[in-house]
Length: 485
Ligand SMILES: *Cc1c(COP(=O)(O)O)cnc(C)c1O
Image (tube, rainbow, N blue to C red; front, top):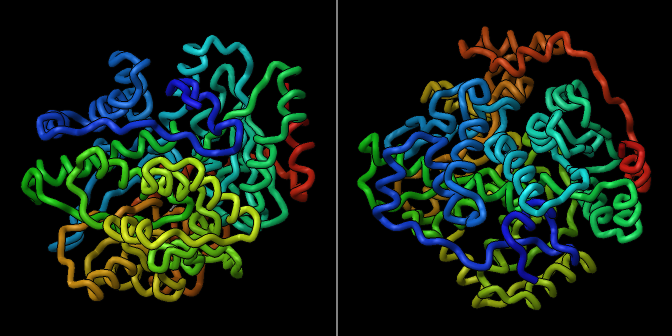
């Protein structure tokens, strides 16, 4: 079924549980790219989104971008700065927003898109936003939606699947329309629980009776993926403006990947015409995507590992469904069949020609916790750059890719979190065994590294814990009903 963009963003997920995706992709001409290079980040984001959102005026989008990415929200004037690392690598830092992880790039924008979509759809009910988080989405969504009129937001996180800093960020969340609840289980349990709630007709009816409807702030919502396309285009412009590459020159990207949302945005940017070469998909020990991209077999029947890069501890990468849709030439039935196999027996294998197409664009690798820590230490000592464990996974995989293929193309290393979100692992990687307790560890990392603690994390000290509820997966439904108005 075809929806308008505003309907797709308001609704989040299609009624049959499938993911919503644009029917066609706008083209980015050389002229447009040159134009974008002259704008600031907010201007670029507004222009790129405007290519997709026909029902939104330029004035509207410019206003939202100014609010989402303006001073006071992001600590860095460039919003998503591109920092040179070495002769062939530049780091795209996506973590200067209010929660210090890349989710802010989209989740500071989504509330504006969503509330505008509600207005355009003449929707009078309250949007009840359900989120499953592996750590960073939850906080990002809570910050984005706190006290936004016409919305309530409820975040489910895996009880033992997030870092201490991530938990504290969520349980101390302020705002009158927010709820946070731990689920006994891992991220996949939380995510499949939320998906089940979405497609529960009786629950939908009950919500409707209370003047509410479900929406999503997870990357299954198209409104999450769209703002992410902008930073790849923006980073390319920055490289051109700095004289690092010539306009039109191809670059590679290497992306620490979990739910496949971030790297999917890179694929979409490439599809639009941005000169991107290989999209290198980096996983931690939960390397289901590495196997898929190298063999064409997706198999989630494997042990789940809790790693030092928890935001990538995922075995069911939702957004892969969108990639399959694109690569099969929008073959709905085929994609549905793969997804049904995944939901049923837990694995599927794509046809050989599909795998070939996939490998034209993507390469993949994975990285152990040990290797990630070694990378953090080595890059700090040798290049004076401090990486978080997720970025370190990508760094290791990129080195590996270069060794394996000899491909020396200039590469954007996508950095998804501030190292201060994962102080314990980062300090350990730097050889510090005696670690400070609680939030004092932030000061310790500042002392050891000479880098300032990001303001939003420093500000956690002294905040009261508001949310302590823990439920088994079967009780998620009841938890939702409890938090409705
Ligand atoms: C969410 C997240 C990822 C994974 O991104 P996907 O879009 O889910 O692939 C990687 N690193 C960090 C720090 C994250 O928060």
